[in-house]
Amino acid sequence: MKSNSNLVSSQALLISLVLLLFVPTLATAEWLSTVSRLLFSVTMASSLYLAARDRTELLIGTIIFVPTLTTKWMLATALSPEAQLLSYCTLQVIFIGYIMRIVYQRLLSVRTVNQEVIYASIVLYLLFGICLTLIYYAILVLEPSAFGGKIVVEASNAHSTSKVLQELIYFSLVTQTTLGYGDLSPTLGAARIIASFQAIVGQLYLAVVVARLVGIAISDSENKE
Image 1 (tube, rainbow, N blue to C red):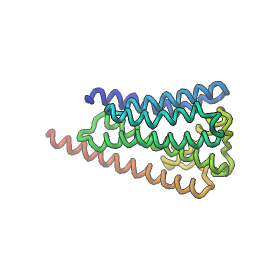
Image 2: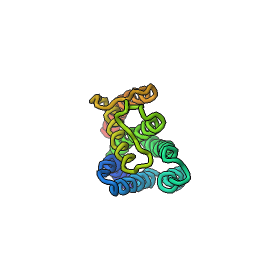
Image 3: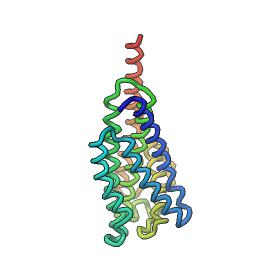
Image 4: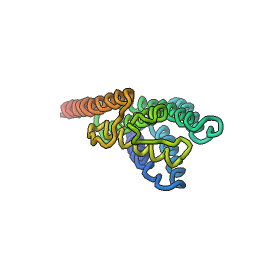
């Protein structure tokens, strides 16, 4: 893949993920919940297309994504609402994890810091936050009191599931950036451990990635001189 193509892909992927973060806010009415779900699916599909570097990666990602999409849209009668939502969260975490792996490998292979690298590093950071959002969602489905009852999901109600996703995206990003407003906090042990892990990784990622990018930039500058 050529450099210009990589840059465009990284920019488009970042834009699609920013869109993904704001998609749940559209769920202010019942019919908008369906629009929100559709945009979420389209955005994730485009993320795979933009991140994949060759046909093999695209094929593997598609194989992972199709069951995820099927679970979200077509198995409502075959599974209970809770089982459907839990299956979707699990498959989506696997799918996003695969995209993260592709982006991470791209970052490891860089020798020069440019716009593509900066966009890719931001993309990986946001993907991690979205991935943890879905893990929190799965925990909430398994244990409704995981957040002290402040978030209640009705698995059979599309509007409710979209609103809960919005709340959990907020919680995930606040945790990852260690803002810690305190208006929403986990009460279940497993959720607390994962939240602590996310906060640690979020800070270490910023420190390690920034240090690596600065180091590469300095080395590249010295070599040019």
